[in-house]
Length: 113
Image (cartoon, rainbow, N blue to C red; front, side):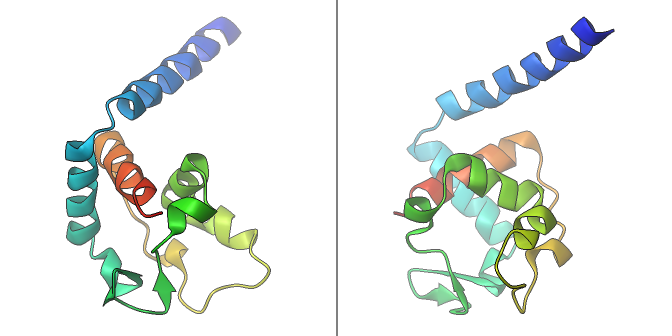
């Protein structure tokens, strides 16, 4: 049973690695579309568009790929690690992204250096 679980975890990491390896300008553009579709600009700002309270310009210089992904998948966990709770909590948004949209959005955010 433990081998089966290890195989599933390994397969999951392989799938994420494959999506990351496919990163391209087209995937970053797909991520920008996910950002728009999910209305991320309601709380965040990029290039002076959106809510100036939580700007994302330069986010890729501050956070790793894994941290960006964790903010999208487990925002409550990431908020708990902050020195103080933000006024607007991402954890209340409950983003539900499939693996492809998640990979695209992370790729897009990684372009924001």
